[in-house]
Length: 163
Image (cartoon, rainbow, N blue to C red; front, side):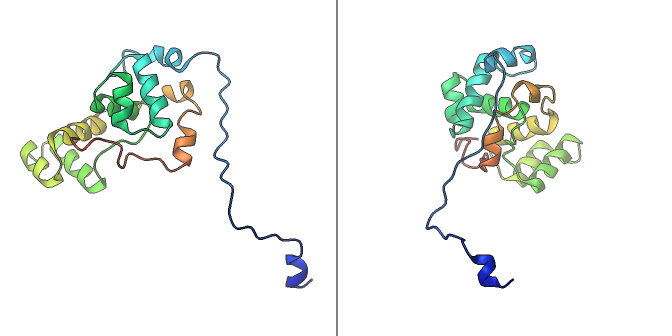
């Protein structure tokens, strides 16, 4: 079998159709209801957390998702972190500096200077380093973040300039 026989019937198109990612949500409860068991662990109400998650997954920035939920952008970022989304404003090297600060090897002012970020971003980075995402929440929001992660969404550009 030659190459021409293998290629027979192959069609070349000018564009590719983006069909997105199929997600299935078989729950009858609203997202806020599914987040209710985690109310005490979230930095905002379950309904605000649901609004943040929905707006963020629709392509909104962290700041706009927070505004839609009536909470501060930093609180929205903390919420997304606890729900399993990567929202650290720092890269790996800067995260090590924050860890050195948390371990007492650096003063806060030294860590701030070395990371070259503002107070709010530094505070968020400390929060991210000291609070693990809620593993149990994954089943409650199953499928909600899947399309966002697959589409390559990230925090870049998501936090307002003040963070």
